Amino acid sequence: MELYQLKSFLEIIETQNLTRAANNMHISQSALSSQIRLLEDELGLKLFARTARGMVLTEYGRILHSYAGEVLGTAEMFLSKAREMSGRKCGTCKIGLNTDGGFLKVGRLSRALTAAFPHINFVFVSSQTIRTPEMLRQGLIDIGFFFGDFLAVDIVSEVISHFVIRVVIPETILPSGSEISWPVVAGLPWIWSVCDCPYYQIVRVKMDELGLEPLILVDAMDESVVKELVLDGQGLAILREDEARDVAQQGKVAIWEDVSFTLPLRLGILKSSRANPMLESVAAIIRAAWSPASSE
Image (tube, rainbow, N blue to C red):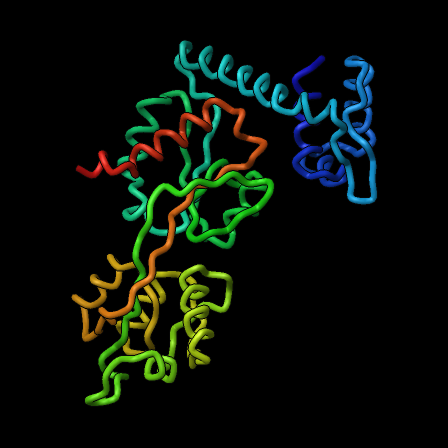
């Protein structure tokens, strides 16, 4: 049995489709089929069943799934340790950042990660919450941050912290003498995101409950763009509390102090990658950086 056969086995499990798995591995479909057939012949077990839904694990395949991940993870650690002892870098770990590095403690994380794994190249990749799951599936990142309660059967996520978001309103667009209320803010121009941004999802739910519709002026997803448009007085928006306070200090912007929402910050990893000891250690280091004790 060869390690590449186990990699093929895990890739088919991940995609549940022979064609997609072959494309991801940059080999022909017939070559991938041959690898799996040879593996099944060597094991004397049928690992997959072809169905209308794609390649589905048999009971034997399901039992062997976790063992395959552990074998590959151990092999990678073996190679990493050997290269570490030889003084060479080995491998790359790509971490998806869905917001600014300051908020995500990138400086602290980089120091901790490189100290724990001096033989690994850590790459911080810009992402967005709505893109994190697909970037994990495509191998563009190995582990990633995202906001909200997104759940998927192929991704394991854990809440590592919570944060507050606030409504920020340029004073120039507030009607003179008016008190801030949901009917008032719904009628003001919004810097909104029509994509599935969790910030706006939670505010949309609140407005739906009240039978209100926001007046959307500009569609913007990048937080730096949203801040700039708010400071320019073009519309109100939703920002993390730290960014809201920063904007309020820079210009004539009011924070709606009576209203706030809390969202989770999550860390996600492909379920098929959990058996990789290195990635589990990376997750543990990130988790520790966000523990209450680390901020004391």
